[in-house]
Length: 287
Length: 252
Ligand SMILES: Nc1ncnc2c1ncn2[C@@H]1O[C@H](COP(=O)(O)OP(=O)(O)OP(=O)(O)O)[C@@H](O)[C@H]1O
Ligand SMILES: [Mg+2]
Image (cartoon, rainbow over all chains, first blue to last red; front, side, top):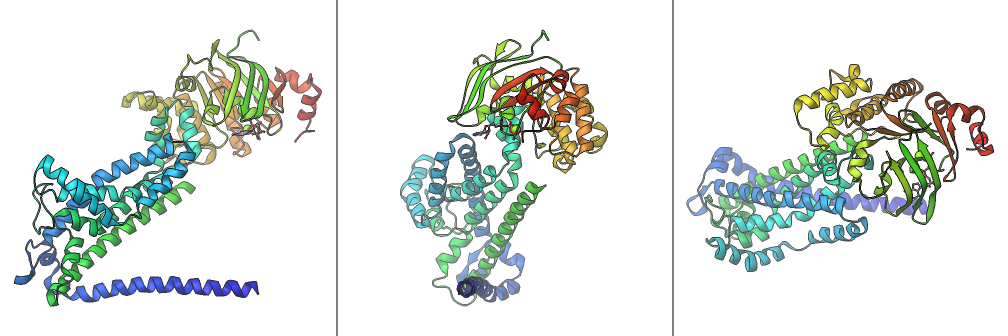
């Protein structure tokens, strides 16, 4: 009796898993079907590196958005990676385990805050602050980078904490026994042992930053032009799709799907890289 | 035995409310090998780790009594823990080289001490690897990952990286228990050479090993030091019935 029950549950779960994966595959297929022909007709270079996006005149160059996405992501990483890794080190090495057991889930909960809330804070607090302190429109590359840098913190912290916690205690003991201080031990052994996990956390954070849309639309200003300073208004690839998809038709619509393909490929590359890093860490531990 | 390198007086140690060392007294002579024997769980590792304050890392540990290193109480507060551990180094039961290159493992202690001169690092690495009889095995692959070495070479690497900080005392907690007999023989030989320059305290479960390598032996039981004597006497004419029982195999 119990066996049959188990089998049924197993089948149900299997069906659920396959329909989820199948759904994702369909979405991917759909994006490629809608965008691929445009991509091929326009040509790789004319699409990615032409710097005028003017659907009315039939010009579809995504270079300004590509540059904006790149800078926004880079800015976010510049803030999020060092800060996130430092917090992770601090939590594992300098905070009692009992405190960490409370703090870490709390930080992970931050990942669940809807991005519109981050965007809201960006519009209400950050943008006016930037406008009055540094000048410019306020809604800018800088604002977007900052908000994204904060948004990816939970990802980076949570995965880095796991990586640092997984470093065998024997490494720490060996280091202390040689007269190293706690900070020296962290810097010279722990971070090196946890390196691939930490890199994986940064890459996954980067994936989140590249893909984030709502918060960016709210704080980046959305002007379609190549930015010349961090205070310029920018529009990212994701923002462009979200802003124009509602009314786009024909070639315009296909161009947006083709933009989706670009994002899709970038995210796939980032996630695969992170996966490789994580696997490297696991096999490294066995050795 | 007139000289004393480490003098342990009335040492008590608690893990929480559990008394793991009971009023231990012991004088470790310089430049000789002292073995600690006794059944599993009697507190050998605990006592050893009390000598370089590794127990400080375990929450809930409380210690009373004194441990004098060259007459200075290491629990007195005047001696910084990191300085103490540079003078009293430790080799662990399972070889634990860092996940760095062989070279970086050996010079780790020097870098910790702030030495970054490449020439000095290179010379020290060679000297210490020779000192641990590892040089010929690794001289062509100094920049390979240390974790690729076979276990006994890993353990000798751990000895080499210890020699680099020029300790006065070397503590070894069952350094051969993860090794096969041939590798064990090599480590024992190495110990015999090292004792010319270093004071060695070794914990071992292996009676033959204690008898072979050590000059003095202490036998522990349930947190107490029940007998301490020169190894010859201890193994031929044990003064305590319980020591005799343990040596002849009547305890676990
Ligand atoms: N971190 C700890 N917390 C609580 N109790 C501990 C801890 N470490 C050791 N003990 C206890 O202290 C006693 C002595 O342990 P210790 O490891 O020193 O024994 P040992 O003689 O080295 O044993 P073995 O030969 O098995 O290595 C044991 O009863 C053990 O259960
Ligand atoms: Mg032990």
